[in-house]
Image (cartoon, rainbow, N blue to C red; front, top):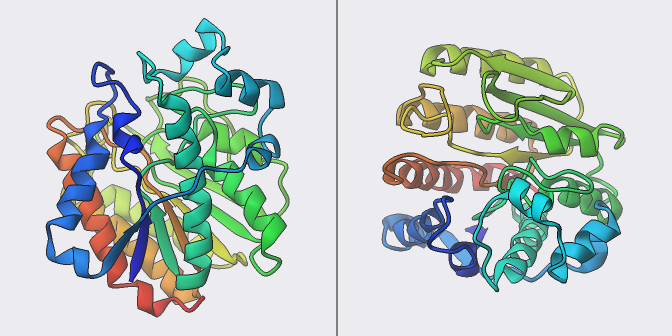
Length: 305
């Protein structure tokens, strides 16, 4: 049974007047719940994250200013998601907690996911690009502190936008390897240095994308990892308004297949952070994430935690 963590505030903690497509979370939840996949997927309610886990990774002043509502106007504007609702803090705490809950579940069951997150643009003392705190860095810190046998972490970021925040926050963390495949001519304008970066040209389609991903996954087989953190953004779809790549739904499914096969072959637990998806209409984003989670149900039994 695949455990996915979801809270209604993932959707309703964002204003309906925001430019951010908040309904995608609810629609993915409903799409799975109303399909045959619901027999293989169990939705669980996340817990709010413990503040100490935030302080371990982020500047305390930044965390406290966000929590108590005193974050500067410029820092709010850099994050986006505005106009902010009264539930933005609780929403964020549930999303960060969902990442931790999903990590524990992945180590126990082989694969798990948070139906939000992948907030890879958040930095030590500021947020950016719809990202307030960096759940990937938070989960890596938690994993290394709690699980002695899961120290070697691969952060596999396949969102169309480079995970600049994750790259900077994890660059000096021992045994964490950051790998990002992204569109070079896209946000963020100033890229950071991951352990491995692959920049794609605008318009890159299925065949070239899959070939590049397979080639780099083959290279990574020589490195010892204990667990994979998958930032699974689907904004590389050709329908995406913020993506600039040209993947089809079949190409996206092949991408997922390569990642799942990589984990199954090496018996690596897989933690999925949902990442971006801004297709117009949003149905394409919903379909792509639905497909990902269905694919996970067919792999979960092959990974022994």
